[in-house]
Length: 522
Image 1 (cartoon, rainbow, N blue to C red):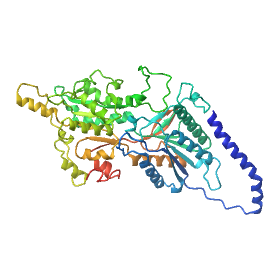
Image 2: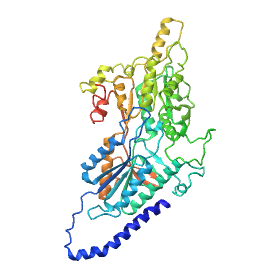
Image 3: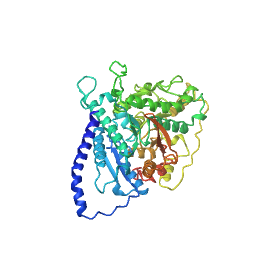
Image 4: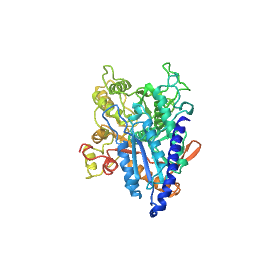
């Protein structure tokens, strides 16, 4: 391919220059004493290539950003014995720039100077810069995916005006091929490669560190909803009302204007429909049994006992702006008309903290009252604050719930009681641990969020690099598994996601240093 030839031409030219210098270097060798042999370094070099921080469609910022992770990886590597000067961090805005930066680094490493490390002493840690849509980006920078490209479309001589691919798509495919070609050359030279977060078609690394994926994001929220609402003890005569708001980039769903999918369409990033489908699959794996036996219902009717994991489009919507999110929630609750009372809603799975923050604002506008703490009477706002500041623990008890739902009658008192139940504040879940939503968790507007354990991931990366550098097997690492990549079983590390609510906010976010008391509004 053209890209590989360009890299090889550069290497050949460098080798030719070095060959011309050999006679001269021999003359100097006869005149000067040979320098003393340098001791081999105890550890090698780690070169880290990550994307720049992703942009968000709002001022909300997840805690999981690349600029937060790379210093923690560097510190963990130093704890494992790597010298600070032997840790090289490269940040690139997109895959095109990243692939070129990686290519330059590898080519330079293959023609080392006297004091430069040998290729066999270098470990590359690469987080390929996948392009994502707005809806996916709201989950943070670390969401794992796979960069897909097609070899027959990667030649730089390809004509982007042939009607099959836009110029941007062609450039992206070329960048992906350049990265794979460079990684292949690095491996042939003896370097070891760790892929972080995103896999890339056509290459199997020595190790893979998986970050959060869509299915796990959906699963952790659904499981927390089940636990908080105590669905296992819920009666079919008094079911819980739950809505799932699945944000979706409708303009990048791989469909044509007439709604038909094209098998020949090139998906150069992780498609929005693939992410949304996986996220819903995680949610529905947990919630399906409760909808099937009637312990959970959906006010909008978008989820029923017959819903399957493939029916993700029934709850997907365009979440590109706040007005759209507000309108979606209002319509789901059938409160866009002049309605006398409220629609009962016990839980809203909002998928990410951007959507969750708009949901809580709109619930307030619609007149829902209370907080998530009301679902568990033993938790009070003062108790939450006391727990966060370390003064007391929160004692959790199950929520007493009547076996049967109250029936509507003509009695004014009964109607008042029903409206009081229907207007109660629901459990709202999200993901991303946005810094600006933490006060909302403290005051009970949002029940929970979740995020990757950055410190644990950084230690994992350092452990993998140290073992690869020492030639030690990775299967001795606790919790390591395998992932199928390009027909190979690749050693894979995956850390559990961290669910955060008011009860463990201090332990999960403040104590590790992810946020401060001021960030929590205290």
